[in-house]
Image 1 (tube, helix red, strand yellow):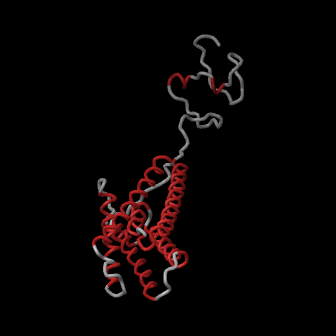
Image 2 (cartoon, rainbow, N blue to C red; image 1 turned 90 degrees about the vertical axis):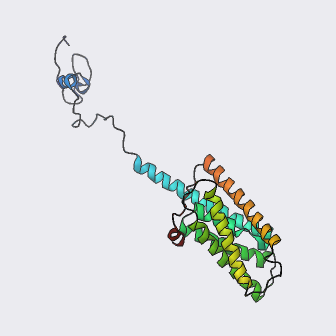
Length: 241
């Protein structure tokens, strides 16, 4: 090619005798004066990256769903293990708190229901609770009190600075759970010291220890695996849904 010679585009695949390169890659007048419109050339790949946002969003949703399923399994497994160890002192307030903080509304109700059912199966099937009406009624009271704990934790789990983000919902859940049991104790047979300060203090520390352990597990797995997605409710109405 002579100096100063202008070479115009040739059909794709045709070779220039001057430089033995495809004509589409040869310098053009338009390429000197400005950008070349390559929209008519199917073999030319533009510099724009393909839009990967839908794929990334789908991957994030799948990861979040898998993380929540794992968290549900951990809460239920913890409830079963703690029922075997603590029997009637199973930390329902702590389990209700972590369910309300890190799960959707429909999921937290299912989880606390599974935990309560597992607790009753362990109690009557393994620990041999007496098959009496009052023992069965106390089981129902525990379930209703656990539901109150979920409502309280959900209502208090709006965005707040740490440590209130966890401690405030937990205190509300514990107070609601104990209030439900106390109301049931006014109608059902109960030991004279069942709601004494030493017993309540013991139950509180069991729940606090369980909450700390589960929170640490959640944070560690979030940092290591990055699969959990926390979805705390934003209002009392959100806790009811």
